[in-house]
Image (cartoon, rainbow, N blue to C red; front, side):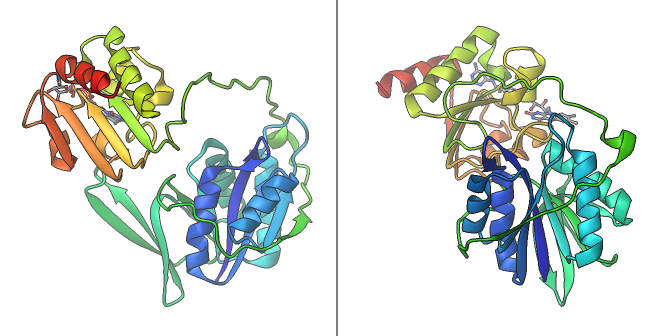
Length: 315
Ligand SMILES: Cc1cc2nc3c(=O)[nH]c(=O)nc-3n(C[C@H](O)[C@H](O)[C@H](O)COP(=O)(O)OP(=O)(O)OC[C@H]3O[C@@H](n4cnc5c(N)ncnc54)[C@H](O)[C@@H]3O)c2cc1C
């Protein structure tokens, strides 16, 4: 099995999901290459620590939106070398490149993957449907390469198979108007504390908090625990917190060691983004709230009484 993992570089580091995919790809066996959209020595070295034997670097023109050129470069290389699988993460750039690559190679894309394996030489991709209540396995019978987009946190990122990769720069063809888009500004959202997708502990607030200003209870509890804050879509739609904090089907997928859901009902669309957390703790005044079905520990009570006590107890 010859597996390629696409990795977008930001600030000298590969996207975290690329390291998760390399970890998974090692289990598939065979030759493992990373396709790095970027090219810094630090990023190459990190990809090597996760098992990439070869790093193919793609460097689009300065300031250009990279996907069109990256897909063209990748397609030419894939046609020449016929990898069995090309793995992408569920990020904006990865999806953009995967879609364009699919069109160029005439291969299907399997998206939202939560697992990938090889059965008797056939690539089989799993993904969750109906809010994670059913799992569908899809055997890829199309010609190689299988183009697969996997969800973040589907696999843990663990260094292994460490090596110093050989590095090859891939020529970027002229893609005409398709590559004419330019990046005019980059906005980095200001945030304090750990990143939601990477935090070991997440404290999430739902509509049960009652009002925007009560989200401070979530922030105070998170500050005591060194946790990131998350929210339900109801809270985001109400404008209490920005969309970047939304956990769930149309928000982020998180897998912290501890997830504390405060005034969250546990709708299926929320659960799908956090149900794989290590220990789930729920505070809800309704003992029949669905969040208790996935919770390891539950407190039936009013968030306005329970949370201040918790914050106080944590000193
Ligand atoms: C296509 C689609 C995509 C969606 N994507 C997402 C998504 O990505 N993420 C997401 O979160 N949702 C998503 N939703 C919305 C989802 O269906 C729910 O509407 C939403 O998760 C509910 O948010 P909530 O739990 O904050 O609010 P509610 O459902 O209103 O629940 C509030 C909970 O707080 C409890 N409560 C009330 N007062 C108190 C109190 N004083 N103390 C303690 N508990 C209290 C109540 O018992 C209740 O259980 C999506 C919906 C659709 C249709």
